[in-house]
View 1 (spheres, rainbow, N blue to C red):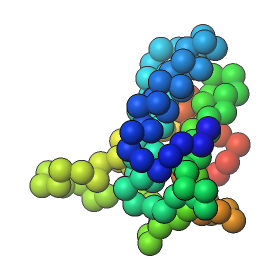
View 2: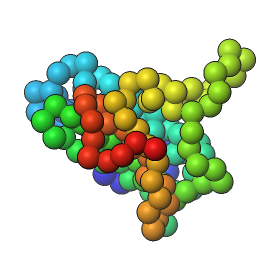
View 3: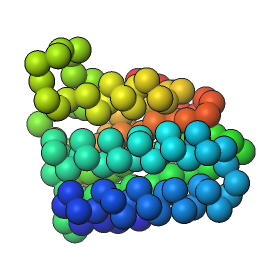
Length: 130
């Protein structure tokens, strides 16, 4: 799904992924983890990257058995996404650390439009983690 590059889109994405994964009878904990990961990846893209050329951010999820892969594509940013160092003083910057702790694998790839940040939940993906 393509969403506006605006923080108001996060709630809608969370709702859609929960509805879709729940309808497929995936385990409740996997649905919850996918909801958190999608939210964190989208929020990270909104804060640190440019939108795609049409002013949107693309959020996709793929299901293979009980493995869910979530990916967010943005227009790229000044830096490659990576988890922030652990610190108790910062009020933000924990999103990719949360993703890393929940995901079986996660990574960043570049395509012709920008960055694709992805995470796999429930088992290994067909991608190779970076």
